Amino acid sequence: MGYGDWLMAAGEAKAAHAATGRPVLVTDAAGKPQWSEVFDHNPYILRAPGDQPFTRVISASGVRPYIASKSAGRWTWKPYKPIPAEMFFTDEELSFAEPYRGSVLIEPKVKATGHGNKAWPWHCWVQFAAWAPNYMPGIRLIQCAPNDGGKKLPDMSLVVTPSFRHALALLSVCRALVTTEGGLMHGAAAVGVPAVVLWSEFIDPSITGYAQHTNLRHAHRTCGMRINCPSCRKSMEAITVREVTDALTEILSDEARTGLVV
View 1 (cartoon, rainbow, N blue to C red):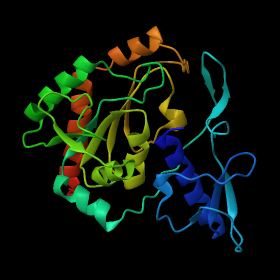
View 2 (spheres, rainbow, N blue to C red; view 1 turned 135 degrees about the horizontal axis):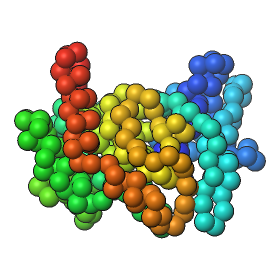
View 3 (tube, rainbow, N blue to C red; view 1 turned 120 degrees about the vertical axis):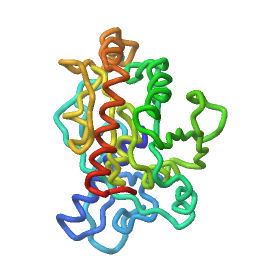
View 4 (cartoon, one colour; view 1 turned 180 degrees about the horizontal axis):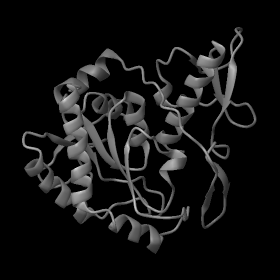
């Protein structure tokens, strides 16, 4: 499963720890402990059961809390409301991120899952990256990737992040994030950074989204298709570049009015 799933599990662990005061063990349905790098340095998530009492959060492949069922062709969702996780960064991770403080992180890529149902058309990303600086003079747009061999937006500063944790540390010093539904969206909630999130018909922000984000979606149902879906493509094409630009402008304007500059 993806990093977003593990961040949602970390959010569940945060809530369980707050409710019980006990450390938390994340397990699969059979009780096998689970671990992700996003749990690293978290003082209340256990790698394995110990002598002290603990509480259990069940979240693993096959038992994700927002998935009702899975078939060869689609996912079926069930009601859920994610809880923002917490991240505990090392000094090295924060030092890596610091030179990019005050940037806006753009993430156009989607996880390779055999379909493109969450993707905003690439030409829209290119146009957005070209337009945004004209609407917001002085804005610094950056893109991150685990290496410099990936697809990069034209004239975009690319930050090579050695790990997903480094990407989240980078995000933590940014003014905002613009992306589609996925791991960095959950990361933005965890580090308290405002986000413009683009959604297709695939899933709904009422299930895996966060109310504090600006969620852009032009669809009236959820399909959960695991193959390329024309309706998902159409719903993403309905999100305009101007709409995304205006949403980011509003976030940065609110930030300027309240003085909350990172």
